[in-house]
Image 1: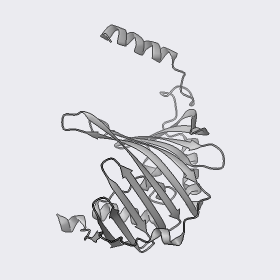
Image 2: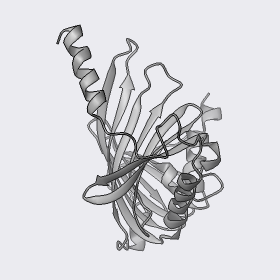
Image 3: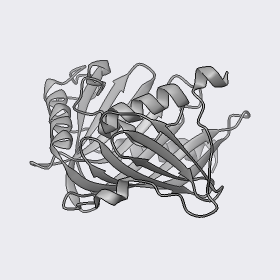
Image 4: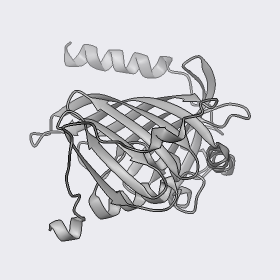
Length: 252
């Protein structure tokens, strides 16, 4: 496409695009809309009220080469949860497979293809365990923020701008689309309308890196799931070897 034709198409798309459904134009919208912040708080309250559930997230992640070129990788994570302190997670992608088990006392990470596992003592809630394993061992479990939302470490106070973009449908479900900003990160969240204040989609853009890589995930919830107690305890299969998981400070 020639430069002139490309400019014409871009201008046509901009002219045809509907305005954002917010209070005025985006430039006139409140910097930190109180109604949006209230809805985000309701999401946290609703999530923390769920005692047993499962959720599946299909996601794509940008990775940036040294040349600046972006690559995109797809993955799936499935959670089984018995709140406040039991979790099982299965992460699958073309490049990595990981399983996580947390029984309220011990968190175990399993690499099924590589044939090893590591367990570390981490008593507390799911959110506390995820925070600790990230800080001490640099083990990042996808969508860990879902288990901090609605707690003092939920991060809502870090938001500097929040606006309602407008209505949307995610997986056939009516939702509200919100755009949020905080230092180093722009993020979007689509929240189910009504009493079920569930996040249905999230997009996170890292703004303090030149390439601004993104992470996007679409979530499907099952609030009627009731995982068995045995689901949260790992029993090593034959041929799977235990290794030590070293704290970051000790490893360095």
